[in-house]
Every structure is written in structure tokens, then in C-alpha cells.
Amino acid sequence: MIIFRYLTREILVTMAAVAGVLLLVIMGSRFIRYFSSAAEGDFPASILGTLMLYHMPGFLELILPLAFFLGILLAYGQLYLNSEITVLVACGTSPNRLLRVTMLPAVLVSLLVAMCSLWLTPAGARHNEVMLEEQRSRLDFTALVPGRFQEFGDGRTAYTSALSDDQSRMQGVFISERQERSDGTPQTAITRATGGYQTVDPETGSRFLVLTDGERYSVDPGRAVAERLEFDTYAVRLSRATRMSELDEPEYASTMALLASGTPDAQAQLQWRLSLPLMVPILTLLALPLSKVNPRQGRFAKLLPAIFLHISYLSLLLAALDAISRGALSPTIGMWPIHLGYLLLGVWLTRRSQLGGMR
Image (tube, rainbow, N blue to C red):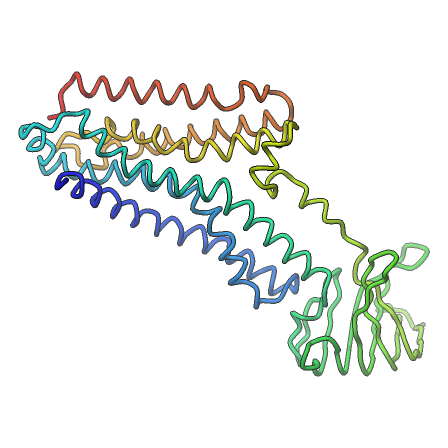
């Protein structure tokens, strides 16, 4: 038990450090993308935290197998450099026992990855897509800041002097937008109004910004002719009705729904979700022999080849996912030959390492 706790602690601490760094990098990249979209007015910045939170399982399901793989390589590599593995072997710790000790935390990590890939990730992805669609179907000007000129979708520039407390109405509205005349020539339309609010056509589902008590000018730089229109109520279509067909995609479906579906897309997504937790024990078999290093080489000697091995494994799975979705690969064959090939490679490397001795 002392050896088990010691080795497990070394692996998990190293894995946590690697996972933390990778998670910080990936989340930072995704946050920048979302922040750019929020700055352009695609959705309010207030939901950024929620979007990132529900994306977390999707990040972890990819990060944890790699982090555990690197955790074994770095932790055991350091043990080899310090001759601790040599001492363990001299004290009667067999290679098979070392493998069993390592497989126990591997099973725990595999269960955590399975919980993410089979349940949390699709649920989180669906929640984010529904939330973004709700924001798109709500007020486009929720992202506007009173007193500032901002992009307002479809090339519009908008200004409002104030928003109501519930942000449902604009006051002191100015909108500039580029349009095309009936003959195809471009023109600039400028609209001023005392107020504005959004409404949705119940029949078509299209959204309109209704402006009240204002004027609309159509002008072109270099032309002496302009059009002026006074109105009590003027409606500007913000967008046509959007369909939620994206939510029918397999990546948003629950695992039970994928099991009940026999389409190639559903089978591909199901096998992908099962492949991620299955990768962990297979990568453990690969990591144990690769972690064996010569003290003169340093513990990073086999790190680069090991990373390329992981990348090739993941790339083949992604290629199989695409092939199954397109119908180019039978779901019956699917991704299982890839797992079998890397499993046999891990068994061969482990056996070869055992025959060569642990020291």
C-alpha cells in the first residue's frame, strides 16, 4: 500500500500539473474567441462565464488522457533517474505488479473521462447551443453600451443614448447601415428615432427592430440627391427565422439516443465517445515501457516520440470518425481496429521491456 500510494501520488500530481497547463491554454484560446464574438455584439458578455463552464467537460475529455499519459512518462522517468525503480525491483516489486499499481489510477481517470464523454460533454454542448440560440432570438442590442457607437449585426452601426432597466427598449436611437438599391448600386441609410424595441413575427419567426418617431435618410457620398422619410413607426428586420436543426446533430444527442439510432453519424459519434475512456488504459500500457530512460539521457528523452505516438492515435480515431460519418467505413469495423493495434503495440512494448529487465 505504501508503494501504491507513493506511485499513485507521483502520477496524479504530475498529471494535475500537465492538465492544468493544457486546460489554461485551451480555455484561454476559446475565451478569446468568445470575447471577440461578444465584442462584436453576437451575444452579451454576461454569459461568457456560463459558456466556458459548460465547455469544461469537452476540454477535460481530451486533456485528461494526454495528461495521464504524460504524467506516467514524467513521474516514472524521474523515478528511473533517481534509481528508485531499481530499488523497487530489488525489493521484490515485479513488472507485473508495477503495471497493476499503475492501472488502478488509470481506471479512475478512465471513469472520469467516460463521465465527461458519455454524459457531461453532450449535455454541456447542447446547453451552450440552446443558450446562444436564445440570445440570437432575443434582443440584438443587449450587447450595446449606451453612449457608444457599436457594430449591430449585418454591417450596421448603432448608437443609443440609454436603455431601459430591463434592456428591452432603446432611447435616442441612431443606426447607419449599407444597403443596395433596386438597380444594385450601394447606398447608405441613416435612421434616427426617439425609441426602439424588438418584436418577433409569430408567423415567420423573423425578428424586427421597431423604431418610433423618427426620420430615415438615404444618402450616397458624392451625390447631391438624398431621400428623407419621416415615420411614426418603422420596422427594421434584424434576421430571418432561425432553425434549431443544429441541435439534431449527433454531437448534441445523448448517449442513449445514439444507442437507439442506427445512422452512420450516430454510430460514429457513439464510438468516438467510447474511444476516449478506452484510450486511457491503452495509453498506460504504452507509457510504462516508454518511461524507462537511461540516466544519461534524462527523463525527457522519450517524451517527444511518446507525444507523436499519442497524436497519431488520436488522429487515426478522428479520421475514422469522419470516415464512418461519410459512410466510407462500416460502423461494424469502426474504430476498434485502431484500439486493437495500439493495444497490441502496448503489450509488445511492455513485454519487450520486461524481458529486457526493469533496471
